[in-house]
Every structure is written in structure tokens, then in C-alpha cells.
Image 1: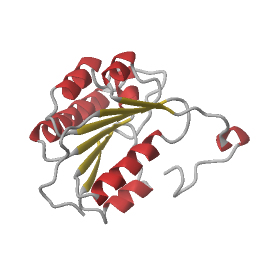
Image 2: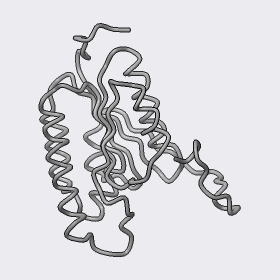
Image 3: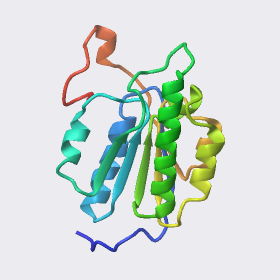
Length: 179
């Protein structure tokens, strides 16, 4: 393991997007690799609100911090409530502080594309955060329908493509696999 004062020489911006499963999982794989090398990782989840396997595992990984910053409800075909907007802005304040402090080496903004799409967070806020981050901070953005501006700002873009999914056969979410 690297020493506690180890940081990346320079951080990049990664995007995991597309209609396939695995965007959050890929980001968590990157987090596990980073923690294994002595880097500190902060993950912000805007939409997810239920207990999940990653939250349980993070209890054993002191250099992986996961914050759920929303109501836990997906916002589909409706405007966000005042409470959801307030939670998102408070969460954004926390994220901005985490990034600017430079105390975390990798910052994951999980489901950020959906948060932008429904108006919880402004696209300009995300672009400014990405462009003004400390040199050693790696940013990972996940979610379907990633805005073109965020894709353009990224150094690495991976698109997950769904070829087949068990949901189509009526298989429900499974503990330890989907959450």
C-alpha cells in the first residue's frame, strides 16, 4: 500500500454512461483499486437512498467514504420537490468542499447525469467543479444520458451498452448484485 501522503501526480476526468448496467459498479471498481493503493475516495450518490452492498463494504474501508445526498427517490416525469432541491444543493456544497480541499484523491459523482437532467444540479456547476479541481483529484461521473458538455470535458469515456438484461424477463433486483 502507498503511504498516507501519496497523491496522484495529476487527476483526470472519467465518464461511465450508457443504457447498460455497470456504471456505478465500474466506478466502485476504480474506487477499490484506488483505496488499495492508499488513495482516499469520496463517492456522492444523488439518487440512491437505500442501504446497499457498497455502503456495507465501505464500513471496512476507512479510505472510502460514501454519502447519499438526495431523498432516495428517482425523479421521473415530475419536477423535484423543494426538499429534493435543498438536499441536492446542500450535497453540492459538501462535494465542492471535498473537491476543493484536495483531501480526497478520487471523487465519484454517481448518477450526476440524472441529477443534472432533472434540475437538481446545474450543468454549469459540474463543469466548473471539474475545471477548477486541484491537479491531483480524479473525478468520475456516472449516469445515463450524460450531457455532451461533460463528455467533452472528460479524458476517458466509457459507454455501457445493454445487449440483454434479466429485468426484461421479469427478474427483480437482487441483494448483493444490483444493490
